[in-house]
Image (tube, rainbow, N blue to C red; front, side):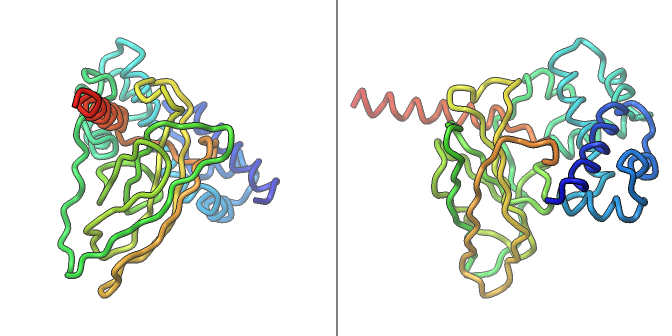
Amino acid sequence: MDETVARAVERAITTMRGNLSDKVTIDDLARSAMFSKFHFSRVFRKITGVSPGRFLSAMRLEEAKRLLLSTNLTVADISHQVGYNSVGTFSSRFRTSVGVSPITYRHTRGATTEMPAIARATETPRPVVRGNVSLPEGHPVGMVFVGLFPTPMLQGSPVRCAVLDRPGPYTLHDVPTGTWHVLAHAVPAGAEEALAVRPLVGAHGPIAIRPGIAARLADLRLHPMRVFDPPVLTALLDLRSAALGRLRTAQQLAEAG
């Protein structure tokens, strides 16, 4: 990654973070990066995987998630604080990106017990996506979420997903035709239920699934989340916690037996 370009994109992301409640245009961001608008949009997408507008929208919803869990502000106040003039528009986008409404997200402390996969028609034989999730030395993690998404952003409902009790091999079954991104998310071992933990993320893609393909290989290497990585919006916490609870119950039953 070119250091000059990286610093320019980082300046733009800093500008986004400092102006979440304000109207910020691509021109504003390009000026902060000291690039022309068209060159800025091109290099921003190349480094982050998404457009500046989508990255900013994700940062606003990420801040809304934080405010819902850490303050007593009303949903209306939070929507205005993260740059939305309409509470209805904010709530709709929050639900689409996070998977639950703002009120539900607050009541469940950022948890979701179910993650519905998008139902799509698939051909026979149904392809699988499989691979291995690895991580750098010195970064032990516990459970790992792996999901198949239509964009490089971990938001909304995955097409298919799996929860691993540790890094290693995974398989996503019955994958529909299309172009997908395999995205992974994990937190340090023992912190599966913590809210303020720096996660590890990984991505592979895009990968194309076409008729006649039986399987695709997609290995992922996790890394500590960086400033250039798009915010994680999907409510993952309780999905991991629920799977962890099932794992503990199975272990207890095995020990009792």
